Image (cartoon, rainbow, N blue to C red):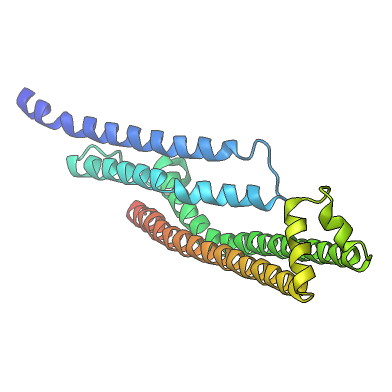
Length: 242
């Protein structure tokens, strides 16, 4: 009988260790994620994005925790050490029931996180594009202002005198010298400057949109896979628990 007990003892102990590690992983995730809500900023898109990102990026931690807990329950069942609930006792009093419910809820949150992430990144990308367009418009305004100032200098009749003086910045002197040789040079340079600004603007917009698309694809796939894992564990546990 002693030998029989010694062969059975490690199995429930292994189950307890697995459940303990699983609970620690689960609590670690919940505590770290809940800290973000100490100073909530529900109207801040960046804060919303951080909350969703933290949940998805660290979602594997509770998933592994649930796997450990589920495996611990399975070892208990195989070893025959599982405590059977009394007839008529509601499942709500069994903490195993709540573990599987929590797994199902996390899976649901992963699914809901997909459209939420798409919406948040859409707003942030739109803000980034608007900022890029505003900066490009301001840059073109500066080009127009500089062009107008140089034209005023050229039309003042003092071009020769200005070129002989040492009061002009080197870049402005070079433009005036070229303008003296070619009256259309200023318009050409201004046009080239506007073209560079618009090319840089388009490149920045494309880069922001591509980055948003890659992040959406990555987070969407990850969220879906995590949801499948959480819901599979939760529903399987609840089905066996009935």
